Amino acid sequence: MSFFGSRFVSAVAAVLALTGAAALPAQAQGLGASAMRERIDGLIPEFEAYLQAGMESFDVPGAAVGIVHNDKLIYAKGFGVKELGKPDRVNPATIFQIGSTSKAFFSATLAQAVDAGKLEWNDRVSDLLPEFQLSDPWVGRDIRVLDLAAQRSGLTPYVNDGLTGLGYDAMTLVRSLRDAPLTRVFRSDFTYVNITHIAGGIILARKLGMESWSDVVRSGIFEPLGMTSSSSSAEAIEKAPDHAVGHRQDEAATTAIPFHESFPYIHGPAGGINSNVPDVSRWLRMQLGRGHFEDKVIVSEENLDVTWTPRVAINERLSYAIGWVVTATPNGRIVWHNGGTMGFGAHVGFLPDRGVGIVVLTNTQNRGFPDAVAQWVYDRLLGNEAVDNVALALEAARGREAEEREKAAPPAHAPESQDLTAFAGTYMSPLLGDVAVSVEGGRLRLRLEDTEATLTLAPRDEDLFDARLDASGAYAPIAAMMGDEAVTQIRFERDDDGAVTRMDWVAPTLPQTFSRQR
Image 1: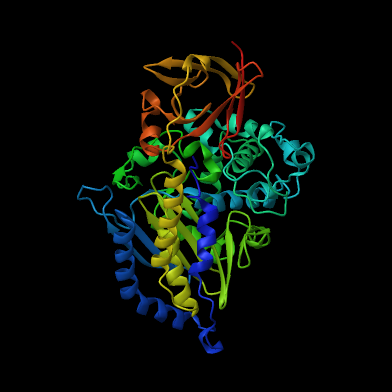
Image 2: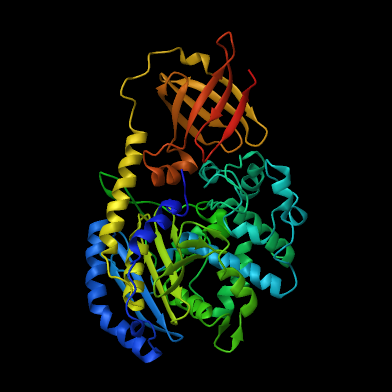
């Protein structure tokens, strides 16, 4: 159950395949501003045809695209519809969730705090937020402010993100890291995690005397850039007169899904921004202006450069900086990030040495389409080898999805009937509180007492169950987002006499242990 990054590790790996390997002659690499503008203008008709064909292939209901060049939004257009089955068309001003492209906004607010003397990049996180602890005390003590957004913590990718969908608040997510296993090498391995950003947002709000990181980004970025349509709540996007509706995709259909007040907004700096093409274009203009926007300095060039600097390798041509991915291509670097919530996909990126930025916003879960169409443009503007990026991304997405369906398929041989009452009882976690397991209608059901979320357990093997969220009450929107996807797998552990003593949530992204109380 990974809400953000749309399986980001797979997505960034796919970008390598989408990036041409052959360099063109040197004269193709040194375009001036006027020649670059001519190249962009000449590419638009082919790009629009390619984008619309790709939307059909990926079954994307609607998209909005913008291109920035030479400190101007020179192209902005909407395609398709805001909601499947309804006539309202997407236009450049239509608001979308932008998912993990929010992480670069977080890194910029960190840079602003350093500019203001409120923080240092090397400050210890545990000194600023004592609630932040890791299972390895040395790593927990040594992790610094810069590490929070550099994706090199050593934690399991996406660890404990699923707690959001079960009703737990931001501070519980932060506290959950104290028991989360470190499965990678600290500061050496790329490992995509969201909750460290939540911790950073809490630190910034406390340091700046604000209620939340939403206030920090509004006062530090949105207002000075004039991003008047940008927000960070479900209420704000729902009330906006011009907004897209998110969609989830499965084998059967593409389906509109509701907004929810906690998802993705509790994750805040990790993925909680709503925006549109005109607003994101202003953000890109600031990046391309190296911290300057019109007559204002938004971020110092020195600290903005810190956010662009690679910190950990993803593979031979991709690195993660702070809230940005950096791609090395034969004819120039690309600084970018994608975003994926349960119903939206996004790409925001730029060519820092060519003065060009691109934003692609879509209203369906991110399966690789936004990155593919953006990469198609980058390669042609840079003079890299031209490939069919959408076709490659679609093939990769279908391969991943086939593997996921195989893993999630019901067991070939149904587990033997067993006495479900043996599992019934109360279990306890120091972090998540009491859990009641009961037998109802011949099936096991699990209720989290602190949040009132209920899950139904379907047997996969002896003592092993798939747990799916019930579509009831406040959890109906989250259940609609997830469809038939399991929250986690649960294994009950027995003692030597066969009595059930413990319940383990065994999905790597949601490792939790509950001891039986009675």
